[in-house]
Image (cartoon, chains in turn orange, green):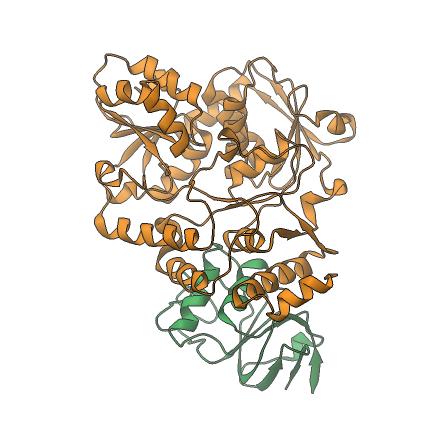
Length: 393
Length: 129
């Protein structure tokens, strides 16, 4: 991989040990994947935040790395943490977990990474434009940025995104290049798809079929495919497969680039496939917890939930997971109060998958998200119900 | 015998080779305290990788494995060097942050055997058996 004179200097340690390490990491990745050079990015989104996922090993590395003094060179943001950073006591998070989680956040802040912990940065103003290069590591955000915004990012790991944040660049390979962004699987939707859980189930099916391919959807109704539903679709595909980019006719900005489906292999998804997929995932009857917001809720989703629970007393706990900024707005508009009166919580900075819910006594969890329904049994040892909000509550 | 390879993580080290025919997952596969391989059914099960020149095809498993390599180093039970058939990101980044010299794509990789003493020069890109 070609390095400019300035990049060589950074690698040599002229700008400190932390930057040299970050550069060495980007060089190794570039070498492994055959990148020709480094290219500038406009933002970085760094995963590996929850103490539950990275443990003491991650905490130790981040604390040591922060001490080396390297700082982010571009606007950089975090993925969800293992708890609401302000309201963790109310959530019932164990003290020891909270203490370690806060140390992780401190280490990132020391490196100049914003403590905005969300998987939907694109809902709070961090919206890269068509063709913009970024280095993001949350799989659902990668999918949304590549597909719905037409920005360009590879599937970054926690450390590669952190290195890119510090250097402000990423190795030029994979999805940064036109030739690797061509559709490679047609997904024909031959079912009426309207509800949130339909988009999740479709995502699970398409992700499994696609694995690492780039699906092109035909037959999705653009009027029903709003951003909330498309983020759910993309998240499920990134969880059941490794889909980092998809196209949807009439919906995603670059869909015309992918519109030669006759040459490609394809699958057809019918109503019975969706029903079977949902049916196969059910394992719980009575629920301890219902979780909405995987990926993190938009304001309109929170408003919708508030409307549904207004004046009710819920039989189980309800978590509405979102970003801090969105929660503040939900408080201003009175949605948070309505949800709390019904016995639920608007939870910021975290989600049902990365919070330690299995250590908090929850055994059966409901979700309207295909991604959450995929991960809750394995990562959180939950029995699950995968359905729409009306059915869960 | 001097075998040329590609530099993944800089540095030099020497030691005795411990070779695995199978990929290694560091998260859940290696105990960070003892440096022993704990994955059931793994060809290196029960063996310690501490101080060895660890030779294996590539990493596998969770990306958190990167941090486990770092913990091994801090606990003084990391391999002295790593040689992969073909590097992937989990082990490559783990080696860099832990300052463990690492090479891949070694010419004559198949000639390496457990018990050989080898000098790994990952500044210049070769291993000398």
